[in-house]
Amino acid sequence: MKTGKLLAWLIPLVLLLLLIPFLVPAAVPGAEAEEVQRVYSLDELPVYQPVTLENPSPDPIPLEGKNLYGPRADAFLPDDGGYVDSTLSVRVEERTLGKTKVLFTWIQIADPTQLRTATFRPYPSAQEAYATSIAEREKSVLAISGDFFVGKEKGGRGVVWRNGKLLRKRDCGVYDSLVIDRAGDFHIIRHATVEQVGAFGDDIMHSFVFGPGLVIDGELTRFNLKDEQDDWIFRHIGGQKLAQRNVLCQMGPLSYLVITSEGPEQVKGAGFTIPEIAQLACDMGAIQAYNLDGGSSTWLVLGTERIQNKGRPNKRRTIADIVYFATAEPNP
Image (cartoon, helix red, strand yellow):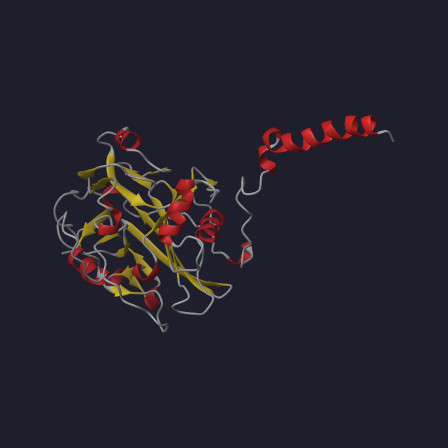
């Protein structure tokens, strides 16, 4: 083949190869998140069973001030199985997925004001305590660790509402926000801005600045570590490491799921990365799923007792705030 004809054939081919990344963005390495390899089969997972409460319309609990009603001792189920009364159902199911023990806690409330938050000391104090102490003071039925929004490493970032009161209005940085409205519905905003959270007006009951959002409007979040914001969050929270995780999900109207996993502190090789726990929340059928403070800050408290990691090595780290569920049934 003559040199001229060879060049005439090669030059268009080389140009085409150079243009492929621009013509087909999905062909660029890292443009799409990799598929997560599950360590479980779907038939190993518990199945969501809707609950009908005996009293679906109790009087709301005032958001400000102390919780009115404490749990009934006779409403707790045996073997840390949960709690059931006329206004609240809590059911705890345990599974071992691969090397990791996971507690799935289903919650059904009758009124949105039964989903509450509390800090150990009034904001802006960053004082900490064991979650069991805060839960006991608040007369909680079920409590989990919050987002540590008063922590110094957060730089005081974010728009924070708690129990219907605006506590802080600052730039959120690259964090994802979870807004819980006054109907008890979740809204997750990726890399939230003050304006995006502010668009909800006074309809906010609680808002959190942590994340990331794992499932948004029923869709699994695909993280791209070539994106500067996703990469920063992952590095900050150890998103690619196996760890204890604490995920709050909405399953339906006033219906929630808490996924609490152990980590390598309990069993070598146990725990989930952020993409893995996101996949698990999606497989569970979550409409919305949001990652809260995990690692050794993970707490799952039923009544006044920490029920996760029993019989395992278990560091008891103090925390500044909790998310909890309360009964709306008067208890003499």
